[in-house]
Amino acid sequence: MADREIIVPEPMRLIVERAGYAPAVKVGTTVFCAGQVGRTAQLEVISDPEAQFLACWDNLRLLMEAAGCTFDDIVDMTTYHVQMSRHMPVFREVKDRVFPRGHCAWTAIGVSELAHPGLLVEIKCVAIQRT
Image (cartoon, rainbow, N blue to C red; front, side, top):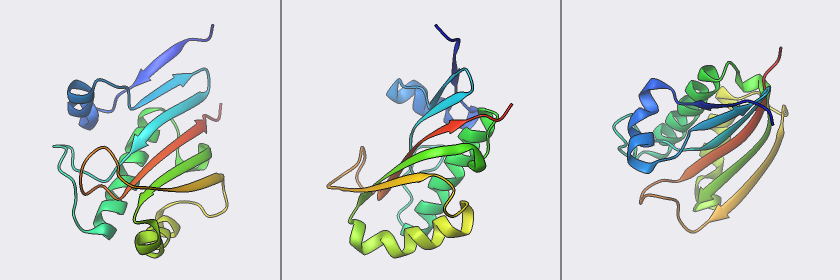
């Protein structure tokens, strides 16, 4: 069995203590990221949709960096959206600003709710670290 490394960036220690899960697990050169959302390090949900989406991407970037990866290493991404048709235009605009276009497989799924009230998106991905 391949070595398994739990990835916990310092700003995410509170969520690990509170919720009891690993933000990411690295097996060999593959990094499996738990869904990231747009909230502060103090676990406060950000109410403005654009600011929440930016924070979500920032949290994902922080996790990727802690795993020794960048957005360019992501090969598969699933996004979960509350009120998808309402917020997708802003989400896409933010995504196109911060994430490489057409770079990985992407599935977007509309859901009725996420783990906490007010969350509008959750991004889950798999990355392959370049050696």
